[in-house]
Amino acid sequence: MNLLPLGKLGARCTPEGRADFGVFLPWVSDSDGVGLGVKLIHENDQFLQDVPAKTFEMECSIDPNYGEYWHGQVEIDASEKPHKKSAWGKPGRYVYRYFLERRNNEPIDWIIDPYAREFGIGKLSAFTLGYEPHIWSDEEELWKTPRQEDLIVYELMINEFGGDMRTATRHLEYLQDLGVNCIEIMPVTNISNTTDWGFLPIGYFGVDERFGKRRDMQRLIDSAHQKGIAVILDMVYGHTDSLFPYSYLYREMGFGENPFLGSFAKDLFGESTDFNRALTRDFFYTVNHHWLSTYHVDGFRYDCVPNYWDGPTGLGYANLVYQTYKLVFGMRGSQDHWQRFFEGDEIHLIQCAEQLEEPVEALDKTYSSSTWQNQTFDAAIAVARAEASELAGRLTYLGHRLGLVGYPAKEKINEDTIQKSALQYIENHDHYRFVCNFCTISRDDNDLLKEGDRRYWYKVQPYLIAIMTARGIPLIWQGQELCENYFLPESGMGRVVMFRPMRWDYFYDPIGKRTIWLTRRLMKLRRKAQFLRGEHWFYDDPERYQSRGLLLFSRRAGDAFSLVALNFTDSDQKAYFSFPLGGDYYEEIHGEDSFRAGAGEWLEICIPSNYGRIWTVEGGE
Image 1 (tube, helix red, strand yellow):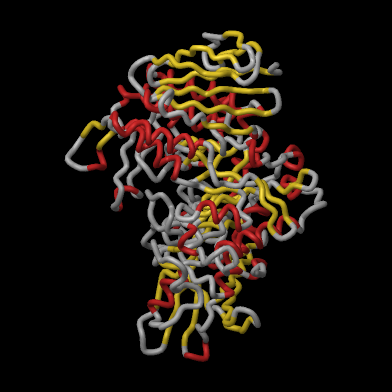
Image 2 (cartoon, one colour):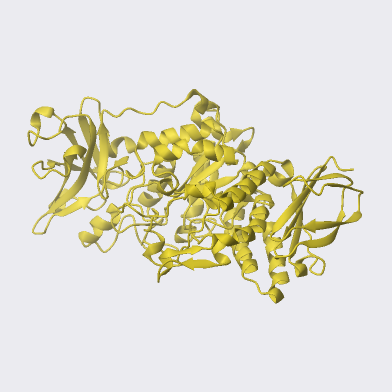
């Protein structure tokens, strides 16, 4: 893969008021009687009927690697206002679009710039005259991306979590206090709708205007790093929206083929990107470089990997994460912000696959450092819905999934050794809140206005304890720590275009207070070595434990040992357990029921209903 020459692509504006434009449009040639132009207007003028956009022609030349290259230059001269009321010539954001004229056919308007760094409302690209870049803090060059096994991830959507990036930045102290050291942000790239999850991008090189501007995103990341929080972005590379210019323009022109899009792997969603095309591969590789370099992100969560998964040695996903890893590897020895990834011989670039169909293979055989996986999630739901006769078997399966049986912890690929892990969650943006499994409340006759009954909050507790103490990387979805209870339909546009703001008022009610107290306690406990990187052992004894609704596992690192005992029933349970290490066992959640045990001694333990206990011995005998 090669980096595209961004220095001649998109809109670039000098302080003196000259704007340069450039875009690769393979097969669209002036020799065929077409002409490309740009329509440009100051943002303050765009809704005024007396102020038209100014139009400028572009020229076509041939790039040896990507074919037809259209480019042009505009002088933003205040003396050439289109109307006396116009803001033309003043500093600020200018919005633009490309339009194509063709012989004997209607013009094609509203062509987005695929290389734009800024965006206006909906389908408008943008740039800023008088742009003042963010000055990164001195601490930024001291920041280190956390080790894989140290991650505690909080997934959020900017506008639902905080309204915009500035407000989200103010909430970072809350996340730091909660115990989070990595935030996974749902797509921030440009889309055509005001309310949308963002998984049909039309622009990849910047921040959608509904969230803020470039500097706002950079400030958020800078501030997060100062608070010990890594930032990874949800990136959508396997499919795009029909308005993405490499879809829209070529469809409107009637081309039978496309230089960027086409059938590749599984076409599950949207307009499929074709990684057989060099332009497509280089485009997304350049997007990764841009966000790593310009915005200092710590890595990526790659959405819907099956859409561009053609195996561990293919041209699609595996190639992209390999090339991105090598890009970072090549920065070893840098004294600038790239140093954040290096610690001795290790590279801590976060590359997380959403490969739910083949999570083990994606982790085992590619340069992915982690993966989403729904196996633990599905197992937890199966337990929550189980009849009494099914509970033992389903708890057994959940016990194995909490230990990530079959998942690698470290792999050597080629000559590179990469730490590996999978995420553990019971909630994420794709599914309704876990409390909905126990009871829902209907607000209307459709699924959009259903909610989980928060009176059943206590039933969620053993599942929360499980994912926060199990092997793998725990992930909390925004508001989960407050017992958020939104219901999400399994299909339909209502999933993605309905606004579900985080209900901060839950922080103050009795249910929210109890849930956040437990979450904070578990996140603090998670910092112990045995939970971060210790051995995981599931006590698979159906007669003694699972048949009674209990699930027991331990985490051990050296002479530090913790027993996690969970009760998924509505009654307190007593059971016997043989403690492998002798010593004083401290109960970690409430500091109650502590005791002394001899090595190999069987003791009776009590586990509260719909809850758990965690007993730890440090320096066991």
